[in-house]
Image (cartoon, rainbow, N blue to C red; front, top):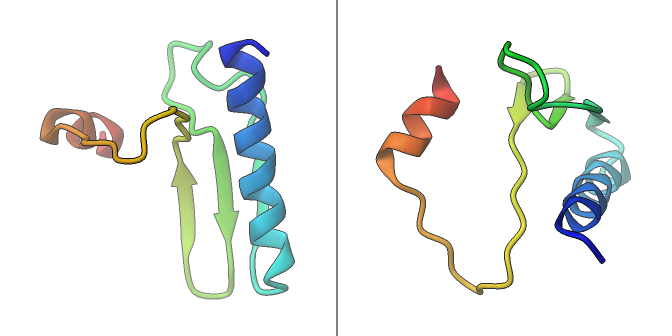
Length: 75
């Protein structure tokens, strides 16, 4: 299975998890990252919050995210 296929599978699994709560709706943004404009992998919302989610998969049990990477996501 390719990295791309694993990533798409993880995104779809997360979407199903949101919908299973009966409180959230979520959609995968196909082609995110292929545009010069910022685009999240998933958007999700309930009556209170709206989320833009960037998904990553890895084989490690623990992942450390650098402060710079978080700031880039915020922008």
